[in-house]
Amino acid sequence: MIQKAGFFSFILIFFFSCEKITYYTDNNIPYSPTIDIAHRGGGNDTMRDNCLESIINALPLMGGVEVDVQLSKNETVWLSHSSTVEKCGGVLGCFAETIDSEIAAITTCNGQNIGYTKLEDVMIYMNQNNIKKYISIDLKGWLPCGGGGLDVEGIMRKETEQIIKLGEKYNLSQYLLFETEMISVLDWAKAKNSSVQTYYTTYGDYEKGMLVALKHQFNGISFKSFFKDNLDADKINLLHKKGLRINAWNIPDSSHAQSLRDINVDFVQIDL
Image 1 (cartoon, rainbow, N blue to C red):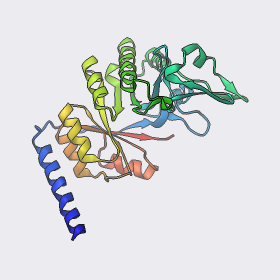
Image 2: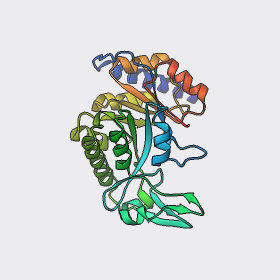
Image 3: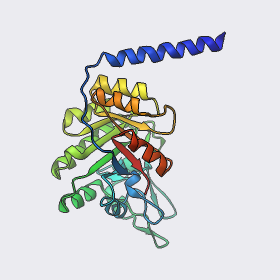
């Protein structure tokens, strides 16, 4: 009896979610081929994630790169998946509490490159070489270094503002895709520059992602593929019908990536 009640509750939730989606005006997006994005800046077995070398290698092969970003104490945007600054033999500290000169001083460890790249260096390279490709920005919403006293949302807003300024400086605003689960930060990005694109990060929850994106007039959803909801052509068609795009990540293999291209997913983040 309890199992049946749970099943019917699920059906009701699904039904009313679909009903809410139909309230929003159709705004069909014209067909456009899937754009492949290099996950974590195109890092691979021979090149580090999120570094200028890997990005330079990836850009000719892909339609853009996805990078993870952190903000230093000087309010400079650096590329890193981790909120901690690692040095040879240990951890220097948290990005939000570390100055640029200390980060820049980290170069090699036992002959291996462990240096960090500024986002501005990536944009300078793209601008100098007239490269007009996407940069998908993964804004982290977790507490940096476990620092409960830090203003995480404030840091993310400042980080977003700095990235937008760089985009404007190097004529790349329309190629910036912001991804985060922090709705207020995406609202902030839209208010600062309407040319940038905003994608609400949903961990496999397609319905929730659509409703949030429609309500806040984001460009689409950043979707953790192969995790919870399975994507199919009908779901992608509904997204496009409502004027939304999808940026899919966590792609396990090339065959899964191809299956997403086949149903016209807009952006597919893949490892090189």
